[in-house]
Length: 469
Image (cartoon, rainbow, N blue to C red; front, side, top):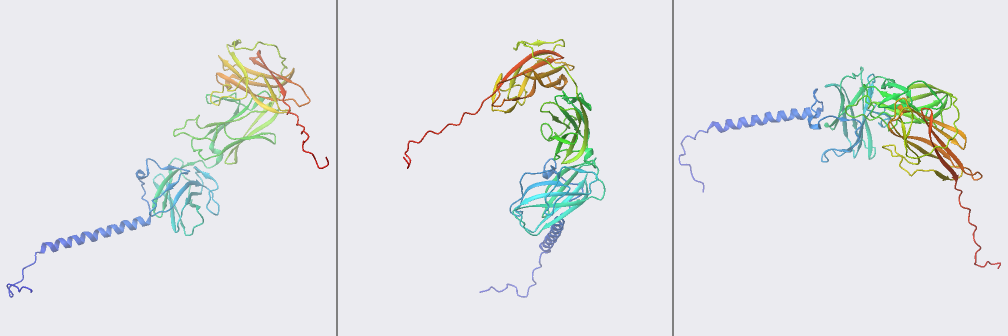
């Protein structure tokens, strides 16, 4: 039973206004918070970065292209995996990059940020923002609405309206569904591939990074021809494919990559780090004539280096018995030959002979095989000349000439080819005559014979009687 009011005709008590004011203030604060949140959501949805980028959340520095490790976004809301990110100046109809680069010519008008992704669930929005210094110079966008297989390339193209400035830093930010994935740096170089090469010349080799006897005229006894190429400081050669082709007249003789592989620069490269060599060694000797070496970058010819090989008549040496042993053999300049050996293998680091010494070899009939005649030298001076004459019996067949400036102290290994005689011929005897500064100081002799295959065995008659028997 409800209790009656104690005072039915009394005035109702006045309500305290302070709780009401506090409630209104709370509602006002909540409304302001909702408005700010809505503004932030709108700004996030636009995906536009600020002019000044903060790389701190992404790591100490932007990522360098090409990026080839799997980058997995948060699986709960971005179910895709970035397999590779690269820069290109040309792509095919499917967005596949046709020429992956890390250096963009300053006058290039078209470039692409190409992204290889897997696990894509359309629709997905890709955006790229291109920066020169801290300024946005362009943006690219592509929305993938249909799936085209487990993996696909998405290439975001950008057309520059003016030349890029090589003196400034350049980068591109990748955003997927308005989420910042990463920032990738790239270099801007000179406008033409020809300008990538700052210097190129022909020599007999290098010593301490400097070319040995550079020039455009050599003789037939040159042991090798070396193209020395230095890349400009204005470009980053990472991703460029260098090669060189040797021609005699119009005849292609050999095409090769740089000695030691493609150029890779350390974080702070020196001039020597930017230098590469292409070494061409003849099978026997260079024939007299006009030659040229063509330098290529990514398959495109960028430089031609002509040179001439002249015929030089020299007296034929005849073998003279000289005691071979470890006793040093001095000549007038002070250079000494400490040891000599023929081997099949060399230590790839020191160049020392790694196999057993060889003084005879039995090969298959008509077999040709390369060996190394290794000379251990000491007290070498820059003006010393080491020569090796190759004789078959008493017939001179080849000569190798090495200026001492072309190699360091220690082991000098000369490539020599031996041929096993045919079945109808007998033993061959090779003599290797070593000259230092024109003086013969040692002879090394090797006997070569053939090792014919064993005769085919005649099958024994079967003991099982035949039907005729």
